[in-house]
Image (cartoon, rainbow, N blue to C red; front, top):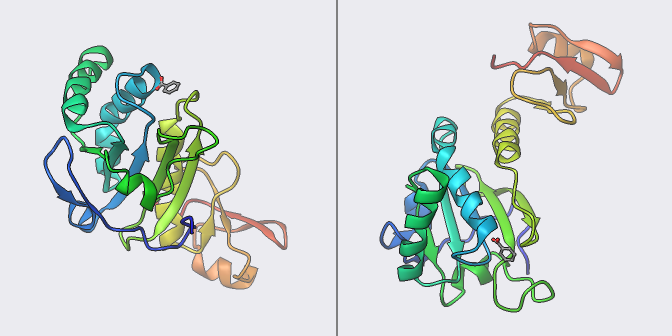
Length: 211
Ligand code: BEZ
């Protein structure tokens, strides 16, 4: 059965551009991003991996380790990585899994046969430090992902994991957040000393609590 939010992220061992890894050992106590791309030496994928490499400090600041995957072999990954570094002006430092036997693609349901019988689609999983699946986004091969959005969602996931808040539409780090419905306004006022603005009994805003 396909993975769902809240499920344990399946562990695996794999060969990568950074050597053999055990996924859970690689993650350690960090959060993780596991993202697939359809094929090496393709233009959209080249920009995606380059963008991810350029955002490496942003991921590290959020305690997130990145791992890319496609069903191409290791020697191709290594050659393609040179192209990515050259054309995207970056240095890819995260592992790219050579998933020739489709073990990872199958575990994470990354091949959608009606889109492509053989290549992985653009799946992206965010995995929490507890090794549970926190986010899944799936894009077609023709549409490159928005990695600013990926960082934004990670900010929301990490905030809402620690405080009784949710984030509104288009929220960005530093903006007001929403008090979760399970907390009464009286309790929210005690819990959020920066203030609670009640627009409706079910719609209460408070400044981001960890800022
Ligand atoms: C790309 O990464 O550029 C790509 C891959 C497969 C189909 C279309 C585009």
